[in-house]
Image (cartoon, rainbow over all chains, first blue to last red; front, side):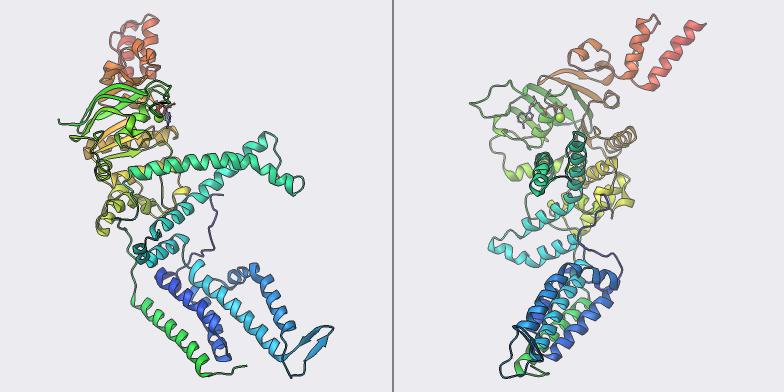
Amino acid sequence: MKNIALGQYYPARSPLHRMDPRIKLIIAVLYIVAAFLCKNLLGFALLAASVVLLVILSRVPLKTVLGSLKMVVFILVLTVAINIFLTKEEGAEPLWSFWIFEVYTKGLYSALFIALRILSMIIGTCMLLTYTTTPIALTDALERLLSPLRHLKLPVHEFSMMMSIALRFIPTIMEEAEKIMAAQKARGAGFTEGNLIKRIKSLIPILIPLFASVFRRAFELATAMTCRCYRGGDGRTRMTTMRMHAMDIIVLIVSVAALAGIVSCNYWNIGYTL
Amino acid sequence: MAEFIEIKNLHFSYGKEESKQQDDVLCGVDLTVRKGEYVAILGRNGSGKSTLAKLLNLVIDDLENASGEILVDGVNILSDDMTEDMAFELRKKVGMVFQNPDNQLVATVVEEDVAFGPENLGLDPKEIRRRVDEALDTVGMSEFAKREPHRLSGGQKQRVAIAGVIAMMPDCIIFDESTAMLDPVGRKDIVATMEKLNREHGITVLTITHYMEEAVRADRVVVLNHGKIAIEGTPEQVFSDAGALRAAGLELPQCAQLIEELIKSGMSIKECGITPEDCARIILLAGGATCQ
Ligand SMILES: Nc1ncnc2c1ncn2[C@@H]1O[C@H](COP(=O)(O)OP(=O)(O)OP(=O)(O)O)[C@@H](O)[C@H]1O
Ligand SMILES: [Mg+2]
């Protein structure tokens, strides 16, 4: 349990790992927007190319990348099926029909595009964020990016503090849950028998001591933090300063340009549109 | 040496004033700690040691129940015009290390955790970096700087927690049973670190412990019992009075117990020894005498 890995961070030395997490975060957002805005073949070609580029740049093995798609296979298949079978094209011959289902060329294309959209969105953001950035670097980057919002009285610092404390304590609490489980087993509790309701009920003797201990920890931690002069985000400095390198700026500019390209392709109808 | 902490007639109890049933947790504590001193506080469970420690850092519920005076570096921290900023200044001067290292570490990387305190002080990043490296070096954890705290042993975690306090450069550090969860080796490490901080860095150390062997190494020992100071003096003085110690619910250090038993069984020993070295010397002397 001590080796529990949070998220899917893949430790490696790659250009993507080295990038400023703030820039990665911004690019990930741009990327999702671009995937949504894509309408024509040129745009999708660009999108697909950028996914391939990201995977290569991240140095994450292809097997790991594909592994992360397991979770979305179902959604992917469902949306593709819906698009293939339920898209109607007025005044065109169906390619194939059976009972109430009719398949048109347009349906095939839109299924292909929606699949590309979902795949590139997931692989793209995974490559940029979860695989190449540690969860703690992500929270940190988010805090720094959103810090102007604190003037609007939004609890940006508090949120990121909460996240990082959660990340710090998840392994500790998992370990504790295991201990409690072993202790309850020693008293004759079973967690793997019976129907669903019975099993859920059998979790109560674990959850109650766990909650009690978590609260005790929380109070102790709060005291320790106060003793270490913590009083919120005001007046607090950081040891590590995030540095943006020339490379980060270039990548950002390229990404913004690509997004602008997609938008203008849509606007002037450049590229093969359906 | 100048006084650093002066406690005068301190009373304290938990709970609301009206619904209060139990006795005072602290009833009339007078204690003075000089700058650079190394003081051990002993006392049975529930004698009010942790309460006293938490009061010194103003991290306690029902603070309004406290009466008397606590002067830290000349400032009465119990006075009514104590502001949050003044409490902040106090915590800068007096650091605390608690029993369970797991519940003191905030960050997912060792050096980030050590940096937490200095970051709260609003220091320059370069200065924080310097202090963190120095603090980790002092506790001998430099090679673990990039590790995750939950993968360290208990003793290592506790050393990281100490580094986190040292990095704030306090004048005084209070250890509240910081060795209680450690094995003998881990405990020795921490005690050695405390002594080093006291001797080499001139930090005033207050250590609360249930281990007599740790108290023996202090400059002064204070025994609390039922919220009052029962015995106070050098380790030699305190541990020579077995009766008073037992009345306060404590035992002699093992070495002193051994000497006591030897005297009972008829060995002619006049001194009392409290460290293993003393003990060995005394027995050798007495044994040598009887053998001849
Ligand atoms: N938060 C609290 N609320 C109410 N009563 C408390 C609280 N904390 C401690 N007490 C009571 O105050 C008394 C002194 O507790 P304190 O924790 O100071 O003892 P201690 O000397 O540190 O003991 P130990 O050796 O067990 O750590 C005890 O009787 C305890 O029950
Ligand atoms: Mg205590």
